[in-house]
Length: 117
Length: 107
Image (cartoon, rainbow over all chains, first blue to last red; front, side, top):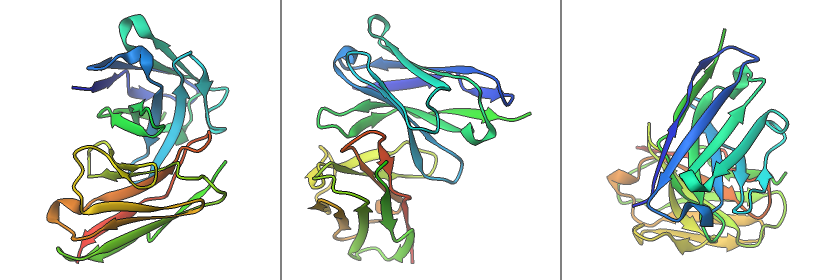
């Protein structure tokens, strides 16, 4: 059974940093692209970053230069280092698996990040 | 970035109704479109990928169609467990982008 468990969320001040982790199990982690997707309360889904099997990262303009995605295949773990956090980054952050066909087929339950003074 | 316009943003329907949700991409994305269902407090669930391929375990009352710029999700006979918010997403190119969502509510 595919499982994705996020951790590391919490309250952080504007301008601060936070590192999210995602522990994956139930599949060959190194063989799949991985994603972070976020959702502010009452709002829609926003893709935050992706990392390919070769470690190639992708970001939208809204987080590029502030967020860094990485993976540690030996530990079946995905990470998101978030710097220079803003109030607009407040959201539930989901770890998700990239499907072979290219969509996103499994999602974790999410971890809440709150950026506030 | 490719913009995805999803409509309607909400709809009211009754159990047994046929429901249609549409997404339009700002440029052609071939069939690189997925549909997700999300219930309150839960993670999204993949329903359809490649515009029309049903994810394993998803009931056959869900169907998808379209290619290029215009896409449709149809629920042929709405069940009580289908009341949720639905999102489309393009994965033709980065950055991946989602539609704004359609909330399906009980009439």
